[in-house]
Image (cartoon, rainbow, N blue to C red; front, top):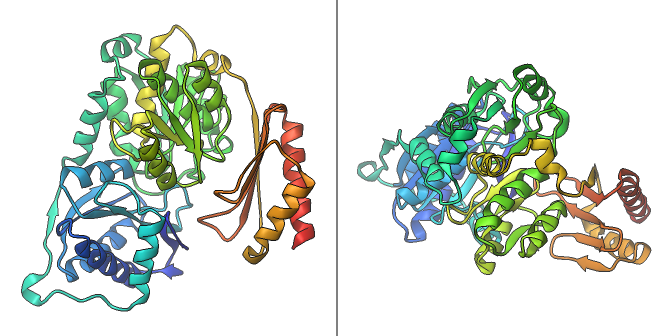
Length: 452
């Protein structure tokens, strides 16, 4: 699978060391031509295939004359911050994010410390198709240097944010249950929480890539964290994905809040201090709009995909943004989803007021999001969109990423789009009542089946 999300596949079934080395060489050449220097930062999550693919990527980069700055096992946002620190031409993250353990991937970043956008990704794919890059001669091969301070710098940058009142946060002495799913979160999340004055009870911190649950931190996968919350009497439960760019919340009753509340509560912390524009994607819950409107701010929506949200944040001069999958982006830190940042902002929200996690979430309307996916021919998508608009007349429509239809009066919406990471079409609907959301998804599925 090749997209703006990177290049990913199953280990040994398409994704091989040879492919990674060749792709890294091509990417190194691509970055060298950009004129931003020779250095390329390289990091990985905890997957068992990570060390193998990191070595392959380093070899590919060296072969075209790049200087490899090896961060080893780090969170993806740590890697992105390191690109700026080293004034590097770009970076490669060896991580398949929330995909199962048999998957891995190469996430490709520019000198901005952001993933390649659509234009840059298309240019790089052209480079890939044109053949083997020009290799460096024997006396100009790139060197490999280690950077063992990237995680510490990331922690210090989060703790230095003006949005945090460390004295008040530490005085609250929050009890936190943590699930790092044996991913890269184990190298940063426990220390962050301890430095925020929390009492931490953690599972899944071994960083061995043996995921004890499905690594995507959605509500259905957080049962063990919920039990840990109850066993330890925790104020909140925090779950991250293997590369630590997404954060999900569990309340003090052991109940998952849903990933959308991560962005909503983090944004509230930011907007209460610095009102401004919020940018999110087309599939994020409207609870974010409720929060923004209550604080005199507005929400702008962008196509799904971190880089699409980040680019729109640049255009809008946004104060905060992110995606409803638990990814929070704060331009004051960097334009990348960052779970350690999200955790600090959410905990600050609890420290700002004498509320439990469930009470903090309960101040806002609750919606139900229903998600389905189905196999559908890409060539028939436009006909499907036309049929959806005809059969489901809506007050608002957005065609920047598939088709999004919204009904303000009912506080409901439907988003139909092709996946960027799987050969499927996604159907997402939200409404105050689960029945209405399921009805929207069901009607959309029937319409698509009729078109196909």
